[in-house]
Length: 334
Image (cartoon, rainbow, N blue to C red; front, side, top):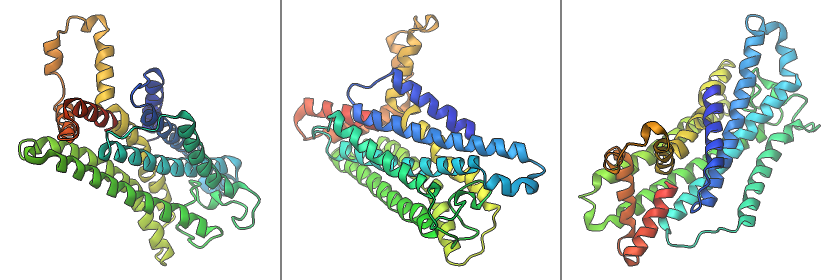
């Protein structure tokens, strides 16, 4: 999972650095920062994997040393920093998509100062939340991140340890609010797409299902990452006995879900990325003889369905040019 998170997000960062969208500068910048945030989770997983290899077979002898070490504290900082920034960035990306779908003809905020300030505020909040337990504060105790072997601030085996309110705030309140907002937003986007179809809804219902499937996958991955954390944390605070071994499963299989899949969902499977990949392929000698008809036939059913479904949103909102602008903008954001 560590290698997937590192390689996948590194590809997104490099790809979006060399290919800079002219029409979706704000959205592309958000996704670039999301990849950077998820990349930090890959670094955290790499640190934990290296520690596991180093202490394998004799962890009991070095448990206290490891949990109280600076590396463990740094790993805990990275995991919290990545989780919170990724959560906030996903919320911001969802809000940006919601605006692009429900108000496609509304002028976008292209002022770089506002966009940068928005991102700086988000990163600043995430950094402050992650760095707070590292400060010499009796509220957090001496080794807040060293409460468990994988250096997570989840604290489920001792739910009322020092700083438990802070842990509950991060993993229950923030995640729940973000998850509810994302779920509501994608339902609202899907409703807007279906409502705009009007009389053509029955004809293009299959293509609308393609869009619905993509939205469902995005929401499902968010739920797969956050719901288990929320449920386990609530159960621990309710008095249920949670095995300390569960930390390893949560750290390796649950927390990195979004970090590993976000590059695929938000970049690597989008129409814009695949179009750019085809353009690059056609510049190679082996692809130079491919004609336009073949290119058209090799277009995926997914892209076609998504493009036509989103194009329906233009019906009755300002004629042909308005439909083209609307469809192009919505297609590029989704």
